Length: 115
Image (cartoon, rainbow, N blue to C red):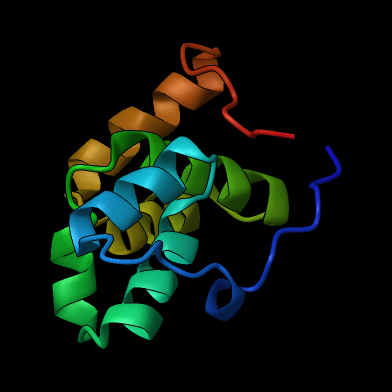
């Protein structure tokens, strides 16, 4: 699946007086994935990495988009590698990452790209 070109996160500015939470939620609604949102939050709100991880903790749709992207980017990686990558990137346990991957493999998760 070809992805549309997305603006670089430094160019995707928060609106005037937009709070950190509102900006992150807006990016998630607009179809951005987890790492893009974290990078944008860090860039525009000068957050540390742990602060950005914490700020995106409840962004389930952005996490699923990130997993979709990982599966597209690394189709030949081992299942074990993918589970560890999902666990680390999405800040979930290995068990949770395995369960999420199983849902993708069964087709129980619809692909979420916004084109």
